[in-house]
Length: 308
Image 1 (cartoon, rainbow, N blue to C red):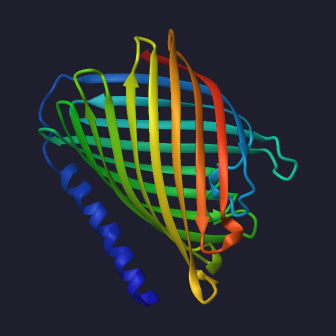
Image 2 (tube, rainbow, N blue to C red):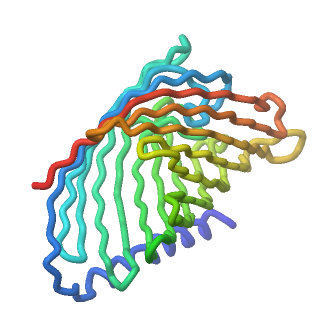
C-alpha cells in the first residue's frame, strides 16, 4: 500500500474507533444508585537475573537488575459510567555496566460505560516518558486504546484496538502504528482460571530499520493450590518482521517462544510475594540474533485501597 493509502486507512481506523464512543456517550444511561469513589495505590519491588545479549532492546527481557515502582489511581463510578485517572513511576537499576538506569513515569485517564446487559465499552489515553520497546531501548509513548468487553458469569471476551505514537529519545525521530487484539478468560468451579490472547501490532518509524509488524499468541493458567499459594504456568509465542532490514535478499523475520512459571504467595493485608522463572528461545534468519535467555525474578508487592 502506498503512503497515501496508509494515511487513509489509519484515519478511517481512528474515525471508526471514535464513532462507537460517540454513539455510546449519547445513549441514555439506565438509572441506578450505584456510586463509588475509590483510591488504589500499588507498590512493588523486583529482583531480576537474566542472561542475554540482545542488541536491539527487546523490551528489557535480557536485562538483570532491580526494579521498583508504584502507581495510584482514583476510580469514580456513577451508575453505568466509570471514570479513572492515574499516575505511576518505575525505576530500573540495571546491573550491566553498558546500561544506564532509567525512570519511566506514566499518566493515564480511563472511561468505561456498561451500555447493554453483559457489554461494556472502555477507552484509555496514556503517556509514558521512557520505555524499552522492541525497536528501541528508549522511547516516549502516547497511546490511545479502546475495548468492547462481553462478560457473563465465569466468561469474558475483550475486543481491542489502539494506536501508539513514539518518540525515540536517542535521535529525536518518531514512529507510530496500530494495535489490535482479542482475549478470552474463563473461570472454573475449582478456582482454576485460563486466559488466552491474540494480538497484532505494527510500528512505522522515520528510521526505516525500526519499522516492524508482529503477532503475539499466549495463554496463562492460574491454579490455586491453597488459600495462599497460586501457580501460573504461561506460554507466549511471538513472530515479527522488519520489512526494511534485508538478510540475504529477504526481509528479516524473528520469532520467540517463552514458557514461564510464576508462583505467588498471599502474605495477608494486601501483601504478596512472587517468584518467577522462564526461558526465551529467540530465533532469526539473521544468525546474530539467535539467542536463549533464561530469566529468574523474585519480588514483593502491596496494595492499599480506600473507599472515599
